[in-house]
Amino acid sequence: MRIEVRLAGRGGQGLILAGIILAEGVGVYEGKYVVQTQNYGPEARGGSSRSDVIIADEEIYFPHCRQVSVLACLSQESYNDYYDSLEEGGVILLDEFYVREFTRSPAPIVLPFSQISRKELGRELFANVITLGTISRILSTRYDLCRLESLAEALARRVPGDYLAQNLRALEIGYNLIEKI
Image (cartoon, rainbow, N blue to C red):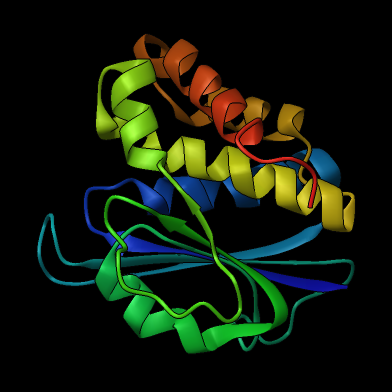
């Protein structure tokens, strides 16, 4: 098994942190082999940002994404740049506020990550973790890995105490955004 997850958007959206939490959750708490890589533009905020997580049952010798299993895009630019990296049968998640132009094939799952974050948690800051919760639902349903509890443990290790309760709530919101697919 080799599963590739790519979270892409703009700097400042917290997608690199989300990738690190995903890698730790699956690697440390579920015993899978993982590699997490990141790429971002020179801008402190607003430039392109990407976090790739590869999950496998055995050692990973090629630590770069070839065919992305789950692609989450939180900006139009990231969708335009990475749409072609999706494997056949892969899942693509789009933030409906930031990605407005997209092809219908394969059919994306378009969700209001940033809007839900603002409405439910008061700030857009938690859209990354809401997205991560949705990715957890997809991975747990399709591949029987990435349990919500594993990500909650990783969150507790990475997120400051002041924000932990809101992040745990964001994770749960994201997980419940979609039915099993």
